[in-house]
Image 1: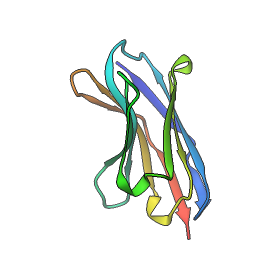
Image 2: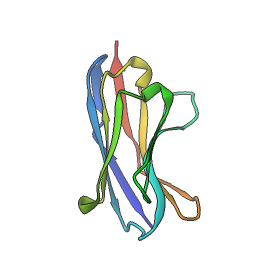
Image 3: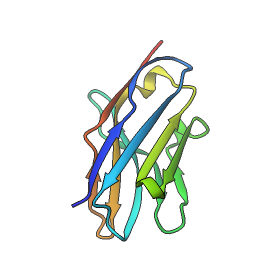
Length: 117
């Protein structure tokens, strides 16, 4: 079973930047997509960015478009989320995820991002 380890969260002031990392092990030879969810206190977990395995096409939630960038390093089995111009409303636990060919979702353990105003 695939294992995901995400890291890179922290405390940053509004307008600052962070780069999240996700390293995958036991990566399946075929899967649909990888990306990032986040969950703010009292809120549902939401998909904010993803990249398909087939052609690398990307999706971004409207609220992060133009500020967040998802990327992959296939040689390292790694995925990244560059987050710029952070806002207090970006405060959440961020989870790396993978969707396999059967639409099952796997998550990392989560990394806390806190943006102070």
